[in-house]
Image (cartoon, rainbow over all chains, first blue to last red; front, side, top):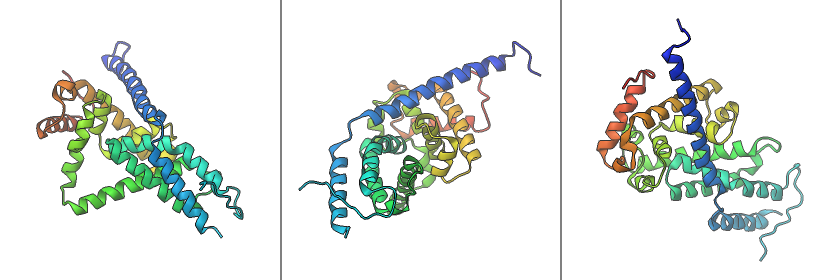
Length: 58
Length: 207
């Protein structure tokens, strides 16, 4: 069914290359957000959590 | 007042302080996952904060030694869908069309600054997008991604595969995603959808 110069195989190879490139881009996008400084609201929130848990623990 | 708490008598191997510092360390990833689900940075950070609170409230249900990141992502994802269900109830809105239109107007303003891949990502279904992000960007195993998404491992695998194919097709065939002609109005969204429809049966494009 599939011979050596099967264009489908060529095509499949090209698609894999594209997928790798897209994979890199996805990781880049994700990592970009993950590498941002955590906004202060998050730290404030954790502080609040700390305070409330300090009250609750007996 | 120092936020330091020395909560001592805990009958588990993990103290609240440990749990807290692990939470702190995972915030960047919560934000990244939330951003990929919501698209919009502000909504995403709200979601990540809600997740933190939920996680803290249910910290007793976390089993120390298991994957805290996956546990947090599960909470975040559940929260994302329940927030959205709530907003649908508040504003009656055709769910199907909500899924079709790549993001809200707010989303699109932000989308103007995005790469083509990021914009194409917004055109995927939620299920495909989350599976692809978890596995392709978040580094989760198929098994962990399946647990996070409450579905079978095979389902995650096929969603990831379909998401990859769909992204390529969108990026290849779609100039409407270029900066010249963003999907700003229903027109462009419709066009993207018709292209997505084309890919449903499988990759049979020839142009």
